[in-house]
Image 1 (cartoon, one colour):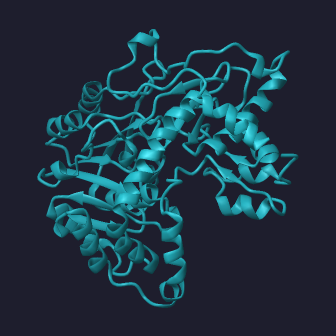
Image 2: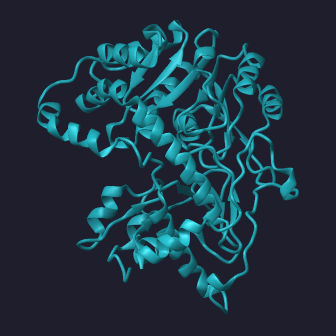
Image 3: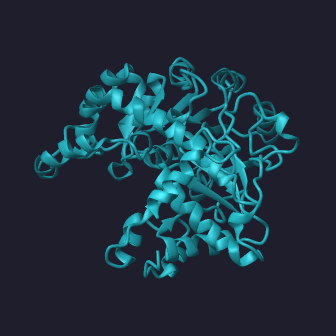
Amino acid sequence: MAGTGIDTSILHKGAHSASYFDLSRAAGDGVEIVDFCIPCNPYFPTPEMFDELSRDLKNILKYYPSDSTSITKKLCSVLGLHPQTVAMANGSTELITWIDHLLIKESVAIPIPTFGRWTDQPLETGKRVDMFPLQERDGFRLNLDDYVRFIRDRGSRVAVVCNVNNPDGCYLPRRDVIRFMDMLGDLDLVVIDESFIDFSDLEQYPSVGPDAVIRPNAVVLKSLGKNFGLHGIRFGYLMANPAIAGKIGKALPKWNLNSLAEKVVFMIQEHEEEYEDSLRLLSRDRRTMAGELARIPGITVFPSQGNFILVKLPTEWSGTALRDYLVANHGVYTRECGNKLGMTSQFMRLVVRPGRDVDRLIDGMMDYGRQFRGRSITDEPPVEARRGWSGGLDETPDNLIQYPSRRNPEYTARRAANA
């Protein structure tokens, strides 16, 4: 692509990433933005589901939705949950805000790096935030026993774990998370944020939601927007015992969910098979994309169980400059992690996308990298997939999937087709 015409200064305004709409408005006519920044499911909803939503769009926009209690009951009937253990809100961020206001009184412990609202929200309301730094040498994997000792040493009254964690994609086995909740049964609250757990393929039933609702101080967060590829709708829910779920539910506005969210909740049951297919396709793409990224000399690829992959750039590269270059020259939007606590702009979180989009990303990164090398980056000899922890390749943790380290033969075919 010759250029997008996007003024990259738009990427330097504010602490959060620019929205897709901001970039689209700034782009030239006919420019397509490929989004590797916002972690969305690219395979769901299906085109047929979007057609169904379009046909009903007039009524969706014209009329009030049902109250949140009615929509929550429908969601519970679809997912097999007890309505008294669920509170549904306008996105998981709204739930984090209410958890902070109602349930966090003094202090909260949180591993970093992680989703920024878990540190920013309680800091904004004057709480003490005890940050437990995850180590790059360990691939940013959380050791729960070390974390518990940290919580005890600091006297934290609330503990948070994100599983799968954003931005590194690390996954904790269900049995270990249950043990973690039980070790901290005396705290005011233990929160397990499972916003990305549906993308994990290591266990058949990875969620601890059913276990949290029978414990006195545990809460599990879910983000439907991320799973269903509908960030714009803004809906998520929490699971907890009836006392906690009821306290949050009573604080939420009666009509805090919009009509589009209601429509999607009623569609879920009819399209469960398509949703499961989307997760299988995304899992396949995650493996392929990690293998392709590992071909770029100097790139460290961290294993992931999310719908995104964390990479560390070569020393001479700048994450901010690469992000701007990809947007301006290739129409590819990425997420550099310089504003994430516990990380620098040397790290990038890249959303898993289909093969053709990945080819565009790889081409753009290789183009950027040529300025640092005397010969074409495509002439570099093959390199094995680099890991984000100390030790040899044989020391890969047994709870992480293996990524292919050799070039996927489909890549060459796609490149030829694209040309």
